[in-house]
Every structure is written in C-alpha cells, then in structure tokens.
Amino acid sequence: MEEKDLNQEKNKAHYETLYANYPISNILHWINNLDKFLDAATTTETSWFGLYQNNFREKIKGKKVLEMGCGDCTNAAVMAALGAEVYANDIASASGEIIKQVNDNFTFKFPIQFVDGDFLENKLSSHSFDFVIGKAFLHHLTIPVEKLFLKETARLLKPEGEARFFEPAVNSKILDEIRWHVPIGGRPSKFNKTAFARWKEEDPHPDRSFNSKHWEKAGEEFFKEVEIIPVGTLERFSRLFGWGERKNKFKRWALKNERLLPDSINKKFTRSQLIIYKNHCTTKQVF
Image (cartoon, rainbow, N blue to C red; front, side, top):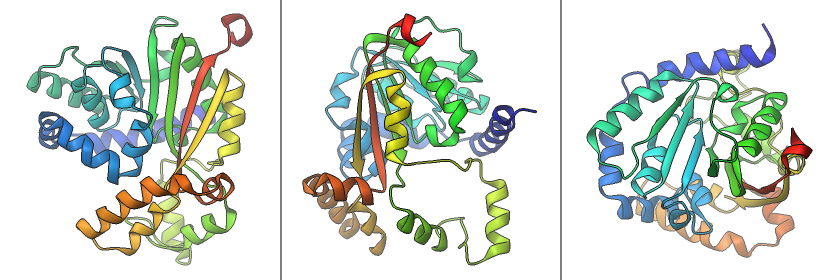
C-alpha cells in the first residue's frame, strides 16, 4: 500500500473512532449564541483567532465555502450559521453523521453539504468556491499528498477566491525539541522513550515540516499571492496560567499585542500561523 493510502487509512480509523456518537449539544449551544461564542473564541483561542482574522466573519456571509477536514464540524456549523453556503469534507464518515444531526436541529440559510471521503476524489465543479479553508488540517498530510491537495484547492477556487489554513508553526528547532520533551495532554515526554514511542505509533500525524518557509514555497507553486501570519508567539505563555478569567485575559492581551513584535521575532518563535493563498495560477499553468 502506498504512503498516501497508509496515512489516510490511519487518519480515517483514528477519526472514525474519535467522532463516533459525537454529541452535538455544544455545537447547537454555540450556534444558538453565535455572537457571544465568536466574540470569546476569536479573542482567546489561537485557531479561532487565526482563522477568523481580517474580517473573515463578515467576508463569508452568502459565500460558497469548502472546509477540508471538518472533523467535529463545529467550524462548519459556525460558518453556516453566519450565512455561508458550506460544503464540509472529511475522510471520516462519522463527521457526516454529525452534520446530518446539526442540519436536523438548526435552520441554516443553506444546509451544510457533506462531501464524504478522500478530498482528492471529490466531484465538485472547478472554480466554484469563494473560500477553501482548513482548520488545523494540512499538517495531517504527508508533503507529497499536501501538494495534491493544494493543486485541487486551486482548481476549486474561483479566480478571486481565497484559501486559508490555520496550522502549527515550527520555525525554531530549539523550541521544537523542548516541546517534545514536555508532556502535555495524552502526549508523554520524549524522555520517556517507551511511552513516547507507543504514542508516536498511534499518532495520526506524519513526520513532516511545519516551517513557514515550507508553506510559502508550497503555495507559490499554485498561487501568485502567499501570506503567512504568525499567531501565538506571546499566547504560548498562557500555559503558565491555570484555567479561568486570568488566563483568558492574558490570551486576549497576548493575541492583540504580539502583532507589534518585529516580524523576524514573531515568525521565528510563533506557535502557529494563518496561511493565506490567493490569485491562483491559470488552468493552463497548473493543470
């Protein structure tokens, strides 16, 4: 079996299990209190802050949007509740069941359309989407497969369309090595060789580059405009705080003020990044 198939099968098995029988109560609560939810999420959480900056919240209203790797479907539901026509793709069919339940329990202007299975085998029309997005998605792909996904992204976008991906950033080898040696959540420390090797074997993420320069170069093959916005250089220190308003207050301050840091420092030490691709190459150039 090819590397592409092995990695996708590993991802599929992992996320089918993760999202099986996933409760939609939180999603429904959030979209029924949409402004309150987004006001909080986009000022305290890196992925929401990153993906939704530059007025994305307003830009997608009435627009046709495709989300890669919709996962638990929270973002797909939020975008649909904002008035976007959302097509949501995931390799795990369990995500489709979540979308069905959300559609049955909330009246969207445009019900969410689920695109099941391998994104590269979609049968969607060329140049039909205003936005193609991924929220912590590309890093699940091997680099050769990522190239195919970006090529397909360019095919699906309208000439004036935009792709935006929120992804982890590793621009400092020293910080990255420190990160692997600090246990967090279900991930053991690299000092614990046996436990770490066991965790690594089960981890659906492939070994690959998360460097900003990689995504700049990858995007330039298919798009004429590439922008990388660092997110989390200061916010990463919120881990020193316990849960509560004090931590959220620091996050709000950090996400707002880290933009003032010199670009050379911000990009090197950032925790994550928003990747924006626009003005895709012509069909003749790419395909």
